[in-house]
Image 1 (tube, rainbow, N blue to C red):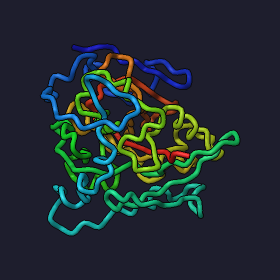
Image 2 (cartoon, rainbow, N blue to C red):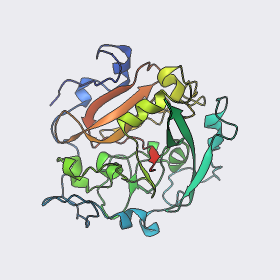
Image 3 (spheres, one colour):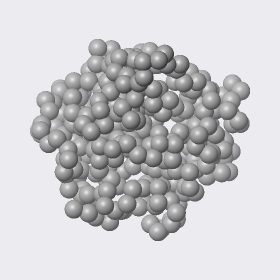
Image 4 (cartoon, rainbow, N blue to C red):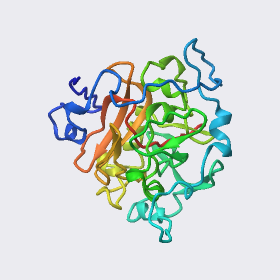
Length: 308
C-alpha cells in the first residue's frame, strides 16, 4: 500500500521543493505495518518508566546500561581480515570555527567509546550536544528487525562495523527509544517521557525537533542546515560545530545513500499512523530544516543531548 509523503518543515517549504527529494519516493512509504517485518512478538522487559501500559512495558534502564548487554565494536565486525585503523573522528571538525578548545569528551561506560560534545549557544541559552552519532550495541544484519529486547542492537552500513565506527549505528524507532520492539508496529505514545533517555548514555537524552532547530541557529551560524554538516565528506560549513555526517539509512532492510543524507528518529510518533515516527532529515542539497513522518522500522542515526 502506498500513501503520500507528509512533509513537515520548520521553515516554509512545500513538498515539491528540492528538500523533499532527500527522502525516498512515495512507494517507500506505508501507513500499514511493514510487510517484510517479522511480526512475531518478543519478550517484554520490566518497565522503569513513570508511565505504565497494560499492553506494553519499557525496557529496563538497567538492561540498557549493563555492560553485558553491549558488545565491543570489534566483536561482530564483518570487515576484511586486514588490521583496521580506527577512524580519526577529529577529521569531522577540520576547518570549523569551533575546533580550538570548544570540544569536550566523555566516555560511554557501556562500551568504553569516547565521544566529542560541545556547548551550543543561541539567544542567551545553551545546550550541550554530542558532535558525533551514537554507536553502541550488538550488530544485526540489515535485513533483520532489531527484536531482541534483552540488549541494544544496531545496524552498521553494509553490515560492516567499521562504518559504525565512522558514521555511528543505525537504529529502528523502538530501539532508539529503548522500548519493546512491538512499539515499532503499534502506538506507544503513552511511554514517551519528557527528556526521554532511550539508548543514550546516563545523563543524556534523545535529541528533539526543538533541539535541532536550536542547533541550526546556534554559535552564530548563518548558513542554515549547511552550518550543521561536517566539512569532511558531507559538504557543509559546520559553523555550529554539530559535525553532522552523511550516515545514510536502513530503509525497508536495505542500506541507502551513504555520504548523501542524514536521518534521525525523534522521540515522537508520526502522523501517518501508529507504526510511524517523526524523523529529521537533511542532505547535501538541503537548505531547510526538514521533517517527515515515516515507518518506525527504518534505521536512522541517533544524537544525544546532555540533561541539565
